[in-house]
Length: 294
Image (cartoon, rainbow, N blue to C red; front, top):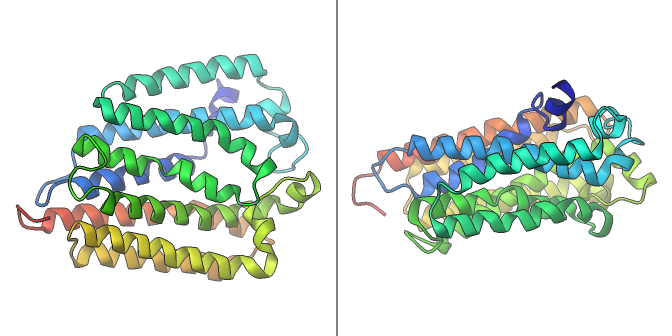
């Protein structure tokens, strides 16, 4: 089982956390004032994030197995090394998608349709590094679709509650956050990517441009959180969490050594604290609001 567990990155849970947290952000922000997060719904998102992150890794590795074999950081992946064949990986992908479908069918009709539509983005993402100079932005739109799903799962649509005025800025904030952490991550592979004609924002922004761009995306992420909070009448706990997340993103950028993979890997992994901080801030703020609030 070890190659299959490696295939879905079970030993590297950061990606699962980063897929889960936008779902919890959307769910928590949609939760009525004075109420606690629904634990059953949150558990569904946790299971769904685990299996769909695994499915995404398999799809990515099927696309990239020839490229991965030429890159030092990825040549040990099961498909690149030959430990798992494409046919075996495809069969395992089927089990992941079946588990995800089981979770999906427990939601309402609108949320099922909304969540299913993200599969188009998941399938297209691996091609973006071949044709698009900003693949990390496309990843942000893909990886944070859960913010929309989390909102819909509570209200039954994207227009319930404060509606699009809240959930779209939240989605944008999460997508900008992804550009920050994945651009830093992409600097680990920039030389291999350049040699193979692949794109990344690490290459697009360049050595001198990366940090100014990431500060700008950090500001946009915080701004999106503020707009989302304003739309639901959030209180000071929420805004404190948003500012704390922005401070952590700025710290990542300021202290990043763009030529040190260990430094960059540590900063990537630390993003689980941003996700947890914003989740906790939203939940605490909603619980603290008086019943009948926005």
